[in-house]
Image 1 (cartoon, rainbow, N blue to C red):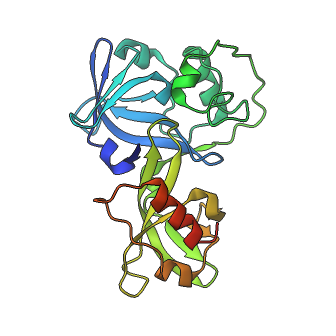
Image 2: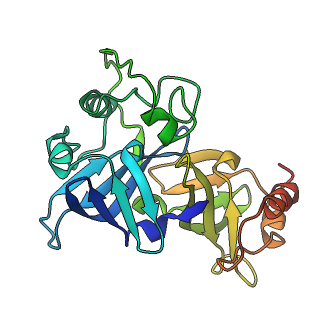
Length: 242
């Protein structure tokens, strides 16, 4: 199932000892475009604490009741390494993996290291090693920032990211939902795959995509009331000649 990133910010998170709080944001990595961390706000004020948890700790997502159930306690999450307000470095990610006795997701060829889903990773035998962190550059980014990014092709800007569609099993971002109404005639919302990215201009808040303006203007419109079936996905990729 594909879930909207915008849905998650209304979900309440529960651990095995009660409620944590509400989802505030998620962090994804720039290489696999996969959600690596969920940020939970534990109170209702601006100064409320924030907790970081991995999708690996998720037991169940209940879309009807808008809840996420975790296999960890709130006390465990509170004692985890603090990511702080600065960009999340690989060193902090490594410390987080050590604390939860998880294999680092960036070691291996799968979406989750040697696994393809967060659930598979949670069932693996742990082989965490003490790595030397020579490169401390951040690799993960907040989704709330990227949902304001412009999308561009060779002949100009065509829209902005309105939302993200995340696979509930792998937590990989399968599509951007792009809003084109201010840029294309008769504007509409269309789906764009991260696999079509040519360049990310982080400083300019812009993502360049390897599709043409003509393809976008004639692309199938994305509608929330229509399920994304295999047939519709195949048609989408054929339309963009991917």
